[in-house]
Length: 313
Image 1: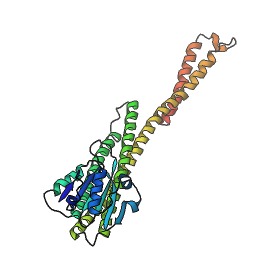
Image 2: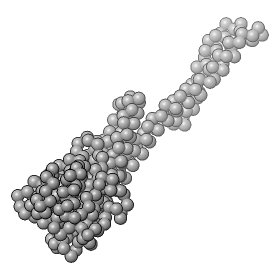
Image 3: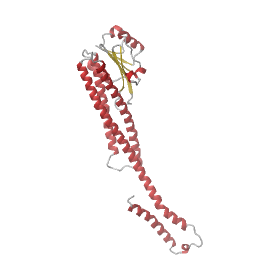
Image 4: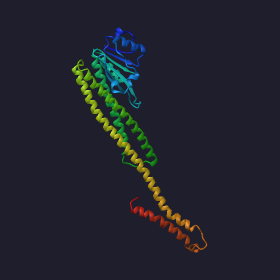
């Protein structure tokens, strides 16, 4: 029988439950559970602890396990939600502080049949692993779009727009990198939970559930490898976007440098002939002005020709 809170503080009604799901429980609901089963209900602060000994432990024959589950969909923030599991021979307790379609799906799946606590626990882990896989697939599609923008073949965008777009992509891939770190940590915690259950519950967890837990662990291992590849791809895209921005900026600096070098001789010539000294021989030439203009043009073209010969422009 499945018991889903809110519940009435009736210890007798709880004693027959195979799975009790506490969602942001009140002190009354916590007291009802502890009275019915004689076990401690972990608080939100306890579920947020990161030490392995705090996340995985055995108390009074029950397995206490916690994991920072990622409950997200679409563009919603991927914020880890601390979630606790207490598994014993006779019941499963889940403690969470946010709504989750994953738990709702498992509840719907098991509501029409009688089940063992270990079965509910295994189904929850399978749904969570499937959810992590969906998030990874969505992230991969997002990176495909970013890759198409960065490595496109056309170069028709203006430099300012190009730089702004690549900066947005850097921020986008940076957020994706943070999400990958959270997914990776969640997968590691779920893998530890599966292995911990196999090791500490081998005397009372059915063999078919153990086989499913082993399959979960194998799936997590493959997802961790996939996550590593996604992280490497994110790093590649970030490096590529940064490199393209740097190349574009270097092109601008190269143009400015060439213009400044080519402009030095004409400015020098104009400065010399603009002094108008009395004894300047060219001052009274009939062709003095055309001569100065021709000299300015020639001294401008010589550096440009030299840059072109060096294939710098």
